[in-house]
Every structure is written in C-alpha cells, then in structure tokens.
Image (cartoon, rainbow, N blue to C red; front, side, top):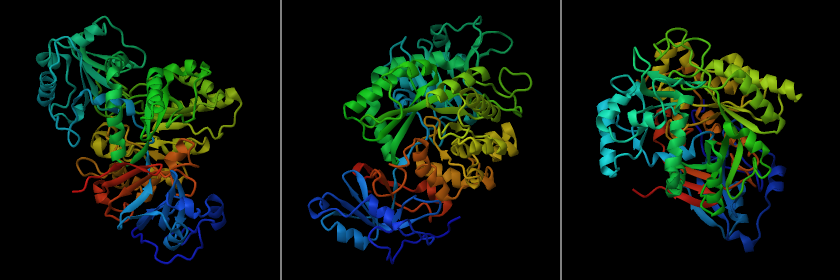
Length: 589
C-alpha cells in the first residue's frame, strides 16, 4: 500500500525524462523518439500543466512528473517543468494548484444506451441513489409519474432500478400491486440488476403471457403461489420481449437524451464509454450521431450475440475501428444472471429460498454449453473479441470450457492475444483465475457489489464466497490484467466510487466484504485507465500519460493515492478533457 506519495522537486533527467517517486525512470531515448520539442511557430498551440500531482499510470508503481504538455489533441511531453517551459515558451499555462491530473477514465463496462433510456423512465432506485425503500413509495412514484407527465390511459409506463433486497417488504412488487395504482396502463419495471423485471396485468397481456405460457430456455415466468397464473415477475430470457418493447417505444427519444448521457459520463471523468450489448439498429444510431459530429467522448459498442451470424456475414460491418469516435469492439454474450437476484449460475446452491425453486437452487445459465461453444468457435475463427457476462462460478466454468473447445476446434493457440473478457466474473474461484491467466483472458470485475449487495451476498452465498467477490488483490498478484466497472444502470458511473469500493470493500452495513481482497488505490486506478485501454486494444493511444497518446485527461481535487482511503468516494472531478478540449468543468462554488 502506498502511504505517502510526494510531488517530485528536483529533476535532472534531461529533456524528456520521467521521474518516479519509487526511484524508477522511463527510457529517455524512447521519449525523445516519441516527441521532439515543437518550433516557436507551433508552440502557442500547446498547453502546459504543472504544480500538481501528475500521475502517469505508466508502470506497476506510481510515477509522477512535474509537467505535462498537450498539443493538437495529443500528449506532447511529460517531464520536468523547466524543460516544458523552455521548449514550449508560448504555451498556455495551467496551474493545477496541487490538484491531481490523470489519464481520462475509461469505462470497462456499462450500458450507455440503457443509461440514456432511463431518462424517460420512473426512477425506482433505493438509497443512496434514490429514495424507494418500500413498495408503497414505489407505487406512489409510479402514480405521480403518470400524473406529472400527463400520460394517457393505454400508454406504456416504464420504471427502473427497483431492488427487492432493499425494500422493507423484502420481496418483488407484483402485478396486483401495480394494478392498484395503474390499472389502465401497461407497466414494466426493470430490476436494478437488469436481469429481471415486473409487469402488471396489461403489460403481461400485451406480451401474450398467460397461465398457459411456458418459460423460455434460460428464463423463468414466476407464478402466483398454488397456480400457474403469472405474478408479474419475469426473469432472464423471459424478460427479453419486455426489453425489446421498451427499446422500441423509447427509440424516438434517443437523440433527445444522447447529449445529456454524454454529459453524465464526462461529469464523472469518463472520456471513453461503453454500450454493452448493442443491437444493429442501435449501432446504426450511434454511428449516425458520430458522423454528425455529436460525440464529445469516444463510445465503444459490444454487438449483441443474437446478431453474431448477421454481423460476421456483413461485409460492411467494421470491427475495432473508430469512425468519428465510435466503434464496435466485439460481441457480448450473456452467460447467466444476477447474484443478488439469485439467477446467477453457481456450482453450489444458494443458502436462502429461491422463488419457483424447491431444491438444489443454483441459478441457471442463459445459454447452453453447446450454443456457447459454437459462438466461441465462430468468433475465434473471425478474430472477433468476445465479452461474456458471467457472475456465478458455474457460468465461469462454461466460459473456460467453451474457450478450450474453440481453440481445439480452430487449431489456434490457447493463449493467443484475443483478449476475451469475462464480464463481472464476480465469484470466480482461484483455479478459474489461473485459467484466465493461462488463456490470456481479462476479467472485468465489479467491486461496487461489495457496497450495494455485499450484505446480501453473505446471506445468500455465505462468507467464503462473498468475501472472494471481484478479487482484484489476488488477480494483481497473479499478474492478470483486470478492469473494474459500474455496469450502469446497475450502479452509477462514478469512477471515484468504484475506486473506493475496490480499496475499502465496505458494505451498506459498514462490514468489510473480504479484507484480503482490498486493492491499493493504484491497483484500482489501473483498472479504469491503463488496464481498461488494454482491454480495448488501445494501450498505444490511451490509458496513461505518455508522449504521442491522446490528450484524454481528468483533473481531480484530491490525490486518490494519498487521501484517507475512506474519503476516496468524496473526491470531485474538476475538469474532463478529451483530446485537449475541455468537455466538462465543475462549476465554481
């Protein structure tokens, strides 16, 4: 753990030297090759940042420099202040005033499109995000939303973010509950996990779900106890018709909320965002916004697995290639469900009752092993990067088996640099982490769960499993490149909060969920900067402060490496800079 990190005071490393407080330096000759001093005619276009904590994120230990120069959207120089001022005499000067400068935060996994869609829905989140902590408040919020927005009878109403584990009744709302306040509107409420939801009677009827309906493979239609009558809860693949309907109805509002969604990410220091699981229509929409010059940040999409065959066959479909700030990186597969919703797929059963399950309740996979195997083969044959949602360890087993099947089938090397990403991998076992290392996989963890649902996981899974969730400390010791994400809309995009959860692993009840897996602040920063750039094959252009890389920067009011660990969540983003241009600046108090 780094207890104290001081700004460098004496630098004598030459024109392009970088000093580390740990006594390490980069290769001076390499820096000279990357960026020579600019001439007087172009120096006025440069900006020099100095007098702050400039953390480069260039190595496994913290490195700091006195000055950073940006020019023409790129980082032109990092090193001593004297050299910066000598070689960029007419540059603009930015006095950081002891604030902290870092590479812009890179979002390893969230749902940009869903975040945008929530702006047209009822916010049903519990504290600290919202204020819905019982079903009466939830119902009143729905009733108020219809009235305040003058929604006519017959029109759909959508809500998002409810969490039965944080409701005083400790249960999901039902269709009967919703019918009491909104009997004349079809209503669908999305669970905070994004893996289930509740529909009222009119919504169920609109989707043709009746007592005779059979649950689809990988899904569940919950029933009124003692009957086949649906109670409104639809889980995993059974919720897909409702989500497709939601997206179709809210589609006309996409452009309206597009800029607002970007501003939300930029306000949190994010310069590269992700949309996890993107339909072909949504990909076209995002590209149209990018081509119209409306992107302030870079946006990366993961195409949906249901479109894999069509996308791979489409000769005009571009992968891993930015077009005006937008690219489709690879394909997203959903392997299982939600641990707090008790649909994540485990090798050992849940310790608490599971709805519609009598015994050996271990959750369920969202895809068969055979289907997963074939998707891996198709993707590996075409060098298509895979991102696989998995929470339970049984789902992780399926990913490893699919990988082994695909490399055998294709004859490729098992450790080829394809950078397959198990998304969440929250309850991966030590042997599975070893497999990730062996097969060059990059787990993207989700330490926010320690705060939001750590107490729930202890109850549902027991302390042993709960304490090893999102094991960044172990992964780092093993030499894995890991990332750490928000999964917004599941938890808010807030990189400083995500760093805080990784470092402290404190639950809502102030219990530490796995003290041995607490990350250092620097490890937590790597997960959203240098490692996140590597996840997207962008380590040569983003993720650290190095000459030639994009001038994607974030300025914080406090240094996360030196502040009290419990106060990391209180750090404020002062400014977000994309390719040298300020896209967010915190208002003066």
